[in-house]
Amino acid sequence: MPKINEKLVEPQKDIVESETYIIQKIEEVITEKSKYEAYKVSLKSTNSNDENEYATMLWKSETIPTNSKLGSFIDAFNVFLKDDNAGYETDNWLNHKIKIKTWRQKNRQIEVIS
Image 1 (cartoon, rainbow, N blue to C red):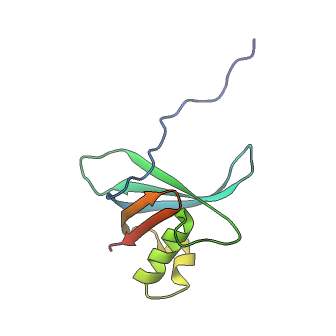
Image 2 (tube, rainbow, N blue to C red; image 1 turned 90 degrees about the horizontal axis):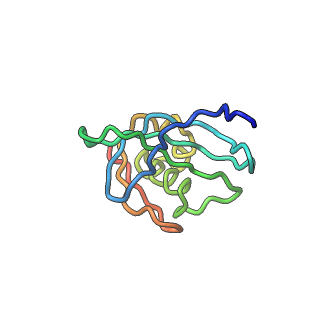
């Protein structure tokens, strides 16, 4: 019988509506099986009692609706930084505090607080 060599890890939690987070890291990733491309955003809750690790995948596509996961981040940073191109540079996202206003399929909206 084959031995399983992979290691179990605790899953990171997805972000939650009405909560605030600080963006800690953004990585470009490609899923192993399907080869989908995304940006993995790792976040920390602003609630000092919450020690969970949070992450969300922002899937790449040729067109990006403002109400998609990726589109909501780009749009929020364009508004916050008062520059229609600033949200496309993920380095501009690091260490910023965001609030999740809505986080439902085809209805994603975040606000950059600081």
